Amino acid sequence: MPDFIRSGRVIDLALLVVVLELAVLLVLRAWGRRALGTPDVLANLAAAAGLLAAAHLLIARDDWLYPALALSAAWVAHIAALRYRWRKPRPATPVVAAR
Image (cartoon, rainbow, N blue to C red; front, top):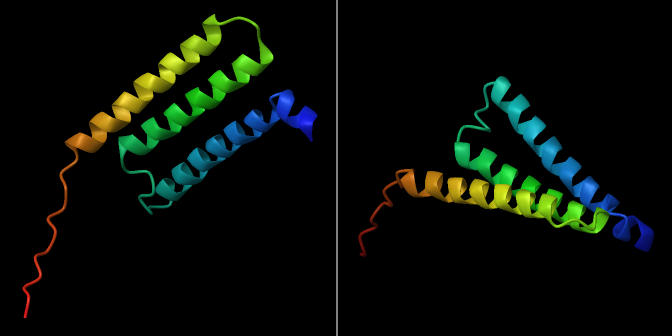
C-alpha cells in the first residue's frame, strides 16, 4: 500500500474519478437532465484536475516547471469558477412572516 501512494498511483486514481465524474455529467446532460448546465462545474473540475496533476508531477519528477504550470492552470480555473459564481444571480429567499 505505501508503494501505491509513493508511486503517485493514488493520484492517478483520483484523477480518473474526476474524469469519470465529468463523463457522467456529460451523459446526464445529453439525456436532458441538465446536470452540467453551469460553467462553474467545469471550472471546478478543471481546478481539481490541475491540482491532482501538480501533485502527481511533484511525486513523479524532480523538475519544478511542470508542477508550477499545473498549479497555475488550477489557479486560473479556480478564479474562473469564482467569477462564474459571483456573476450568477442569486434566487430570492422567501420572507416568512412571523405569526
